[in-house]
View 1 (cartoon, rainbow, N blue to C red):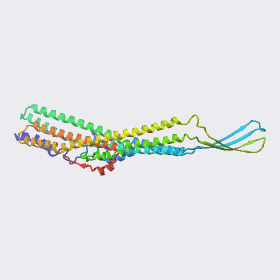
View 2: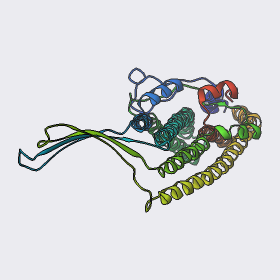
View 3: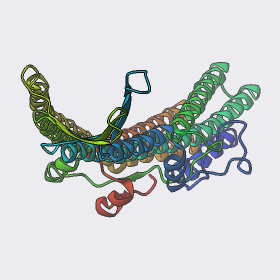
View 4: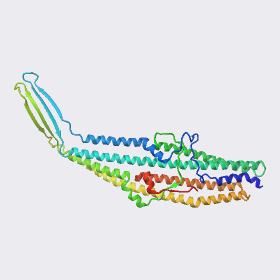
Length: 433
């Protein structure tokens, strides 16, 4: 009787001693990809590829260059005007006049224009930095999603291998007349369910890889990533979140927008003062046969147009920018604290699963395996214990995935650079359960 149990017992013991999450197995790859053709991508390499080739980041850089060009134009002085005219077509009575006019800006228009252009450059630089952090956060979230998907594929493969062995063992027992064919049918149904889980895990991996390619931008093909999916960050306190609100990209950009509209309002006020135009030249009447100097000055009279409407518009837009900045700060604070709370919740879930649920499921599985080996439990009881363990591990991976997504969202909101955050956050690497 013990010999008939041996094939299934060996299969279950193989899973117990070599489970997917208990060993550091190489990262799973998409079906059809080879390790030699597409080496595993590290997170640092993914960042480099994204910062070099992401089109959104390139667009933000071009916007900064465009703003710098506008700053050059803002500092330009008005061009002089050369005018020549001839009065009378008859040579004997013709009068020729040549004048050079130079507009002179008054009221600090040029300095106000330069200040507004400088503020625009500050905003584009802030947007570029925010986009850089946003790209790195997207890459980080997509990278860990691929890591978790690889762990799921590895786990599903190990589970399918066990299910196949159990199905073969059940088939042999039915052939030997030891058990009812119903047991073989149940084993095959269990195998089909595990095979479906593998197909779903592989599909999720392909989707995660596609999302990672989209986050990185144009570049080499990605078949797998290399990293530790079980790495978890330390909790972030509410005080730390509050301290970083002022440096958040959206808040910083909103405050820079206030300064830009202040500069634009100053420019509109300066436009109330009319510019003058100095004119120098000479005229030569043919009849007199001598040159006469021309000196003139022109000043527009601000009687009908005092630029009042543009000043009012600029001031109201400044008020709007201040209101928007306050609303942005409130929104960022709320979303950041919510992301922090999600991190705490998922970390608590990860800790509970790792320290309590997984050890209990593993203990139950070991007991069922031992009892099955001794003939005290049926195969289906051992299979049920295995399924419980696999579900607990899948839930553990889902909690890890949600933790990584929440961390990436918090980094995006607060403008935390992952490279510098790693030194301050002290991410904790958990042992594989």
